Length: 404
Image: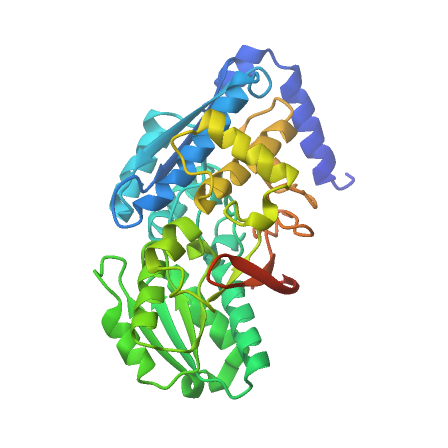
């Protein structure tokens, strides 16, 4: 018997599904009816990083707009958002509700390293697509362990590699201070630094961790400054971005300071910290910043701002978290269109694994979305940018990273 071509088998299976009566197909597809596609998510509408909950609210507004335009394949999207307060046990409880009671077709854009870690084995065991997570951890691209899981943003480990490489280009004798959140995401910053520094890591790096429940990171920064480091890398999330910028300024610490793209929001980080305190801070970027005047006449940014005014007027159009939600919803829209009416979980995952050089108008020019069954890091490109007191200024080339 000749070997079976998997692509032919998949095409045949999809074609056969398309020939079934709509009602029969819908019964075999969780969360899918003749009129609805049910999607679920958990996020932090309360708790220590509740500001990030606006990501999912922007996505909900996008899907509402899409529904007004007729939906996907004649179906309206029902996007169920449940609050987990950024507490992993609550995430598991709410995710079980979404899958076992609400019967969602798949999970989309769930927030946080700890929360997603609490559910990743459960959802992969069930074969539920767990898509475009709002996380930065490298482990989420592990296709062997988690074939049904896919993040969206570039890996924090790759981001850390780029930060260390740039610092060494500027000062080959640099010593590093590393503040990191005590979870998988924070430890990716440690891993990224070790990737570049190798055996020199222990002699060149002073590291300190914090818990997401800590009220401040003041003591850690005082300890790190005392090490005499020339470079500070802050592997932080949420409100800690503003805290670390403000405290480093208060200490008069003039180290070259890197912060993750996830806390580069002008609205949620720079303004609360004080724009003048953030001068010189460096981050990476892969998407257009809606608060940057450089994009004021950009057609895609104008379309986004019009979307916000009409469909999410209570949201801040200059908040990068809202732009991120809008962008990821657009990519999810593309995936559902590629499903061509077959919304089985297997075909949804097949289409997520088949995004080839996808351009999104909210990404920086030259940066594209690419996925495959063995590549669950949709974005591996970024550029550095520096805060000048009024806005972020991009510099240098687009940098290509690689998942590890």
